[in-house]
Image (cartoon, rainbow, N blue to C red; front, side, top):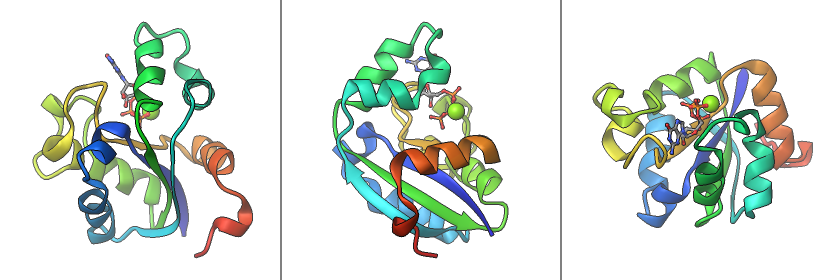
Length: 138
Ligand code: GTP
Ligand code: MG
């Protein structure tokens, strides 16, 4: 089974939406095999999103990710990376398909409620950044 890394972002934890978001993952057949609530520093958010360091919204993105707690998760299932991204919907909620997390909950293209890994290589790096092997309980 494939694993992917997911974050419930600050806009969603602030609005107490963690359970509703996790329910959408579980309904799609994904299993939460690790989960923790943490409050990132801006530096930690910057390290996590460093692939976007040259983008104009990078500073705003790091500020946002450090603005409130997040819930970090490892999700497991068949085709978990693609399935997770399908359930999240498009980055910009205006483009997200009906019923997706971002269509239902996201506030803007920046404050878009969830993160999900985009490939097996990034999933492995992101999981290892947040969790030790002992914390992954399949
Ligand atoms: P992630 O799962 O969070 O990586 O989203 P994504 O893969 O759908 O989008 P991408 O990797 O391109 O962008 C990463 C994150 O940067 C997005 O989820 C947004 O939170 C933020 N972001 C992307 N585009 C913009 C933008 O135009 N403005 C702002 N403020 N934030 C943006
Ligand atoms: Mg991305």
